[in-house]
Length: 221
Image (cartoon, rainbow, N blue to C red; front, side):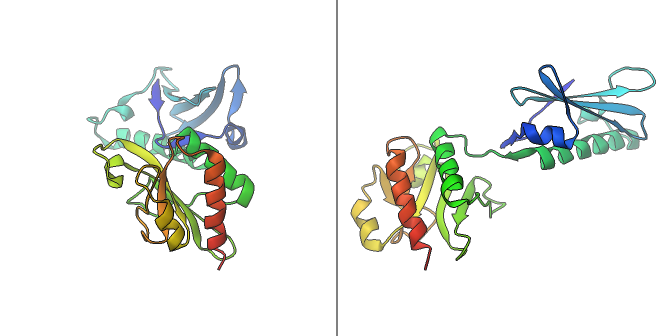
């Protein structure tokens, strides 16, 4: 048995059954033959979202594991590994969604944006997979950015990863609120018309939602 982790992703249990998984006690189970039916690949996802796999030789009924060994070589092993990975890639594409921002306050804000504006996060940069933006549907303009960055990027003597958000506002308003404690000049954006906050619960959601609305309205023009 092998445990598989899809980094920065979380399972959508409803999509598992749509894909072909069956619910069995505490697991969702999916079975598919691979390598011309020489092997049976069984994929299990438990109620906590942990995914495990078994590859069983249909003739000997023994578990096959060579495809999991980086040092194993040969065309046959490579074929097993490729078909095994193709199934996992298909499951990930169809049954998992991006789950990069695990900070609780970030999750609450993401849900608020979905419920209020109907907008989903957009990940625009392959080089920066922990950066995402929201944009208005009508004008296509950005109104919010959420990122995971080292704390040192905001002037702190620490490289601890933190979750931050950027908002848009009029330059005079930005200048009046930036205090380098709760509010910082915009990281990754124009420092005169964007500002950054840390999602560490030092600013209440109600205040963040109000500032988000201002930024959303600024993107209307």
